[in-house]
Amino acid sequence: MRKEFTYFATALMFFTRIPIPFTLEYSDEIMNKSQKYFPMVGWIVGGFSALLFWLAQHVFSIEISIVLSMIGSVLLTGAFHEDGFTDSCDAFGGGYGKEKIMTIMKDSRIGAYGVIGIILLLLLKFLTLSTISNQSIEMVLIAIVAAHTSSRFMAGTMIYTHQYVTDIDKSKSKPLANKRLSYTSLFFSLCITLLPFILFQQWIFLWALPISYLGKLYLGWYFKKHLGGYTGDCLGAVQQVCEVLFYLAIILIWNYTS
Image 1 (cartoon, rainbow, N blue to C red):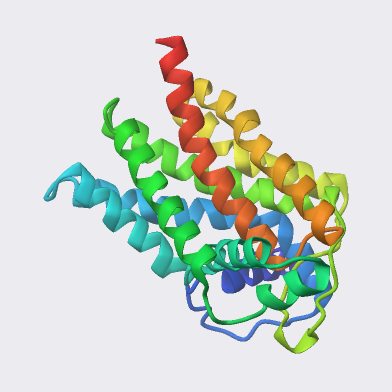
Image 2 (cartoon, rainbow, N blue to C red):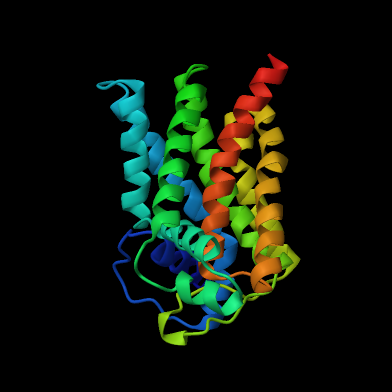
């Protein structure tokens, strides 16, 4: 049990800004085994964002509440995944060939592709959540939790389906779980992912999972074509894209089932 808590706390420490009030043992093995708790981190981030939205909508408009919720998730994670998405936009938008792409990806400066990409992504998140709010406040709360949880699971599956690309500059590489675990651990991670659907009894949202997963499949193919695999920034891009695709999928499902 102590080891499992260490794995969970490691995932929480690396993917959020939540302080851990004690010293954690660290190793590559611990980092790798923490991957099964990625969806649990999504539960925490999504739950915090949903709570912010629920509190804010009692005082402010829905639009302002959504923006405050988005700000909350960025602050809680330190824009960890957004940073990966931006770096990926710059690298694949301005780089030609694996070496050039990897060099740009590790540059701390942000370029035009990254700026344009993150602006459009955040705008799309805002608009999709605003559209979902037309159904009910409850739907927004469930969508936020489910999207954050499932998108982190989908990013984690890259470790099972694609090869990790060694960083050309080890001094700039981020800690990353890059070794696949047993399928028992993957199943455990999937069970955590499905909890929002079970607890909130919104089974129709399950249809959003395969639609969202298409984003992971496409990005996985794209990364393999240009890099031969994935990097930590690529995982951040997968999480962000799958999250917004989940929101879009919910809207599509409602449009064609109502």
